[in-house]
Image (cartoon, rainbow, N blue to C red; front, side):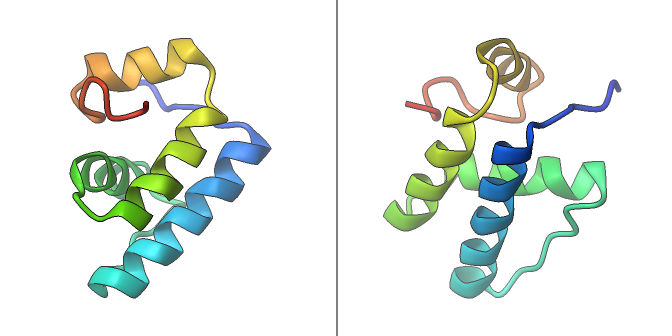
Length: 83
């Protein structure tokens, strides 16, 4: 699996997302590990929590549209979860 390359701004929002997810659910994700990052994105994209969704959308807003499409195609992010 090819590694995803995120921008500085998207990494900032990913850190904020992980922090909110940890506060809410008590689960920690290692952002330095590809599998852990992808698990966080999968969990966040399907979360029904409004705050988690806001942070997730902020992260996705910073991504290149092609990267969002790739995340959807690989099943990491659910279609429509980024809007």
